[in-house]
Image (tube, rainbow, N blue to C red; front, side, top):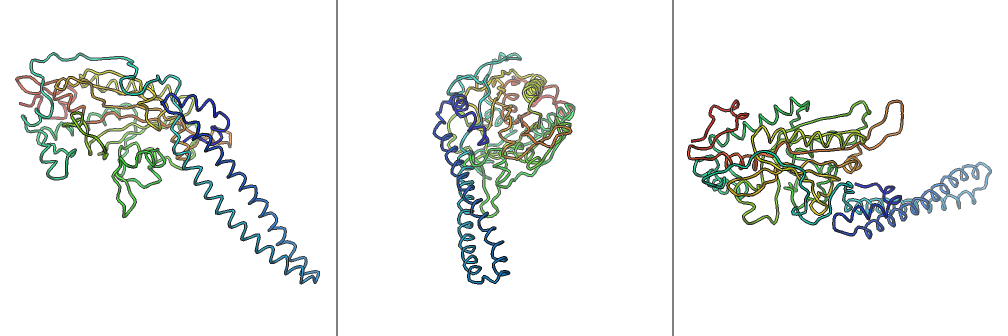
Length: 423
């Protein structure tokens, strides 16, 4: 969330930078400034009313002491009126604060200067490619391979729950477990602290990382308890540091977490959601960084390099793209996407997004830090990325490694399994 001071001091500059998102936010910025001015006006009136009320309270005692009972009683009545006025102004003040917060929640993060202009994923900027696209005699999509080798049952998942909830069976389930172990082991080697978070969050946690109110329609909600199923482990893990003041020496903070993730994916349909391409429940390993603002973009590049090692070790063809303004997430200042090539579908599948949110989440979270020897606090920077999401990684592994012999398992996963090929 942007601060109102940021908006007031840099309104024109912010409006220009936000225009990269292909929308004019000037009216919303003006609305925020107007509401803040209204809040300040109410605050001034409230302060003056409370000051008068306090003065009357002091005078009442003196008037009674001097025997001026009539004047004292009159002052008492005025003090009661002022209390009523103060109560009304206080309610107006709280309402204005709430209205301002609602407006600020509608304003997305300011894109980094390196974010390219564009409207859709077709306008994303290719950074680099890696790996070799396999030349296969038979290109078979993973959903057909899953059925052929009896390793994933989409129809059974549909029976038990509904579309988007596959059942992994036998070697399919074991590969899932192997991928989780591989990703967590790699994160441990890279110095990440492993977290096992809750799979449900409260409303404050959703607001803290920006899923609420922006993505409310995409989240599963338990009305009775007002809890939400997590869309990613980023949310509970980052919220560990909600309402926390760190010391600058605490940086960098590096955390990783495996979790199931839950997304309604409302409006998703067609060939792009077939098989493992888009699910309502899926497994993912997340990496989260809390960082000093001076080092967050250096950290972002390190995170990209780390995720690149994962796809390289899995021997998957990949490409890295920088998201354009139209494809950039609401909370992100800069995002890199990793895509792996899916031979059976002859297309690139997104498997990771790595983002720097700068202070946008930290402002919502009230996540601050202070330099050594200083009392003043500043907003920290937060970053996160998938390392990695399992469904499309598994889809690419199945499709890219299929031959008449069977499906070969990448070498780095074989130590977690008792087989090196699915026959």
